[in-house]
Length: 158
Image 1 (tube, rainbow, N blue to C red):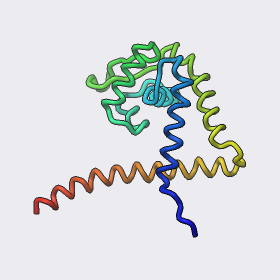
Image 2: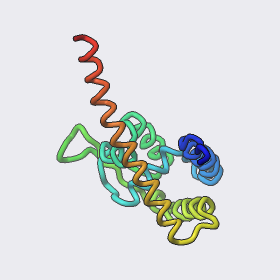
Image 3: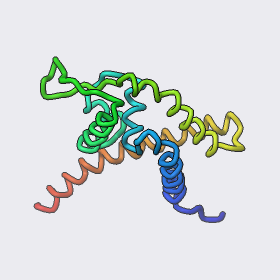
Image 4: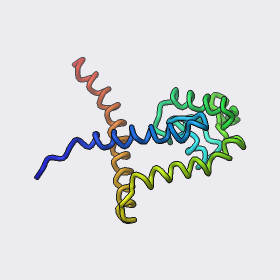
């Protein structure tokens, strides 16, 4: 059996080319990777906290704050102090933010159609399922690495 290349090569390829694709299409809106991830989250659940957006997008809080600040400056979102927790902010789409949802979804569909060109409907569904499972495994691994990293420090001092 022929050895398969490192899977990260293909994941990286899709990511890099996808970024170029999205940069080209989202440029007119002034948004990039972190920005559209936050918007997609808000399209699903408007009025959630920045912390919830960080968890949804699997990004750190500082990155989410920068993205929300940019989207706010562009007029796509607004922040309001969370009345239940005055230290937190809830983020809401503005009318301008809601207006770009159909175009954004169309761009995302176009990308998905392009990278699954030639796939049968079953292959497309399987690809989505497999990539989602790999992502969930990676997220779990990241959480375990943080725990193991702390354990390594304890073991070194013994």
